[in-house]
Length: 265
Ligand SMILES: Cc1cc2nc3c(=O)[nH]c(=O)nc-3n(C[C@H](O)[C@H](O)[C@H](O)COP(=O)(O)OP(=O)(O)OC[C@H]3O[C@@H](n4cnc5c(N)ncnc54)[C@H](O)[C@@H]3O)c2cc1C
Ligand code: FES
Image (cartoon, rainbow, N blue to C red; front, side, top):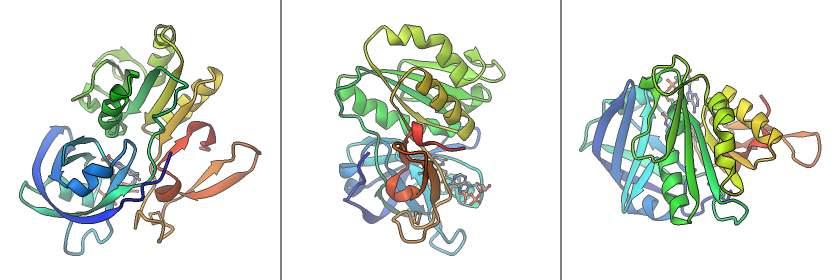
């Protein structure tokens, strides 16, 4: 989980902005400076409107890198993301990145990576899967959503889907499905879990991983401002691993990826 030291602020041109699901857009721009240094788990902080509203940048996980092309997957939840979804190809954005730390991939202690995501938390998983496969790891995804319309699986392989309404795949939560499938994954060597999604999912996943002595990293979200450790807008309280105390971190600096055993909800 290393922080990225090659941060640049770039004026980029959107090459495509495609609606890929209800309120979800896939936005691509060319930026060799970010593409060259990005690692799975990193994020970018985007000034969506050169005018005032919204004034602050908005953070998005890096979804995919293809040569110098960077992709993000954005769910419309408010003024910035609504505006981004309507910003056409040819428009410019100001993009700071790559920011934050990254998932810890290059360790020899696992053969199989379980990527567990929920809702828009699937956004960082495509880039993560690509890099894991280049390292010779086996990859399985567990993807959860309220209904089939919430599932974003484009570009992913070897996925298992759970929906709360049963409209796609298993009926239940991603963690219910993980419980059911776990025996079939655990036959193929040591496992490490990588995750991103809503807090109730991460909480249940952290408990599952603790019960099964599985290492687990989770990418968290918080409100952010600067993305680079200046505004103190992204404080998150976490458990210390070696004592029973808690400490407060800046998620843009020490995260967004943290060890799941540190989660407090
Ligand atoms: C490291 C990181 C990576 C992220 N990656 C993605 C991604 O890949 N795709 C994606 O769609 N979203 C991602 N998010 C969340 C995204 O940044 C917020 O949804 C966005 O900033 C909301 O901006 P807005 O102007 O549309 O909403 P606002 O109008 O500012 O707020 C609308 C609602 O969203 C809530 N909100 C605002 N910011 C956040 C936030 N950072 N986290 C959670 N809730 C928030 C507000 O409390 C409010 O309820 C990420 C957040 C972080 C911190
Ligand atoms: S977002 Fe400003 S300190 Fe983290």
